[in-house]
Amino acid sequence: MKELVILIRPEKLEDIKKILDDVNCGGMTLSTVMGCGTQKGTTSDTEGAVNEIRGFKTTINLLPKVRVEVVVEDKDVEKIIEKVRETCVTGHVGDGKIFIRNIEDAIRIRTGERGAKAL
Ligand SMILES: Nc1ncnc2c1ncn2[C@@H]1O[C@H](COP(=O)(O)OP(=O)(O)OP(=O)(O)O)[C@@H](O)[C@H]1O
Ligand SMILES: [Mg+2]
Image (cartoon, rainbow, N blue to C red; front, side, top):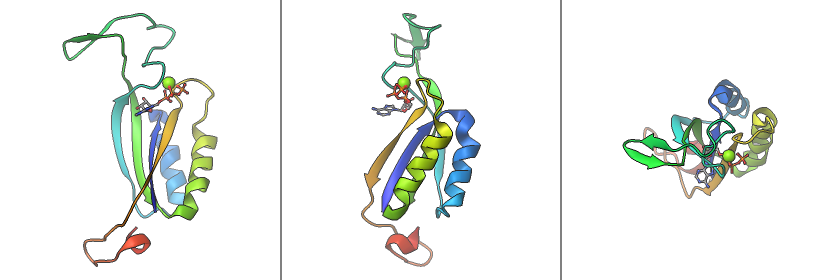
């Protein structure tokens, strides 16, 4: 099993829900987060600007992103990556990222099922 941590533009939220539904994922966890990548959140209009975040002056500008965590069987990973890329790529900076983690085990609390059966 693998966990995909998918960070995308907020406007892609409905698309990502559909993709995960299409692969019959057992569930997903979603949060709205603030983040930045290699451009440190600067866009052409804010470049060089000093921002204040909670009282600290910083040149890092955090932008809203949607973070989706989903644990899936190994066989579904590449399919999901492909579909997410197809849907979320605009070609502009800030399209997002996917991080992949190994998941050792999973347990459905209600039944005690383990591993892929618990997804
Ligand atoms: N190395 C990282 N560690 C943790 N989170 C990251 C990392 N890189 C990106 N993120 C998260 O992913 C979001 C989107 O990143 P982004 O797409 O801007 O990455 P990038 O590497 O700058 O690529 P691009 O050049 O296409 O913009 C960020 O807002 C942040 O939440
Ligand atoms: Mg970026």
